[in-house]
Length: 81
Image (tube, rainbow, N blue to C red):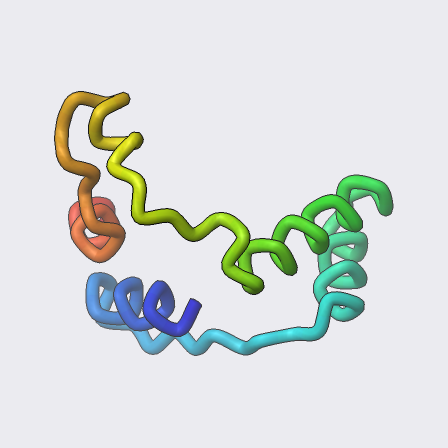
């Protein structure tokens, strides 16, 4: 997520700092923001899976599905700023 914070900082010319939190902290933050506990637990488990690399792929399926090369995240952020 540091790369996302860096891209947003560059695009908005505002310093944005990413702070990694434990799964328990994330769950508490989500609940404090109004998310119900079951949904917060689901989000935490999803984030843990992503952190383990469970969603990583070398597949080009997305490009085939949308019939173009996917746009890099930094480019999307810059265009939205």
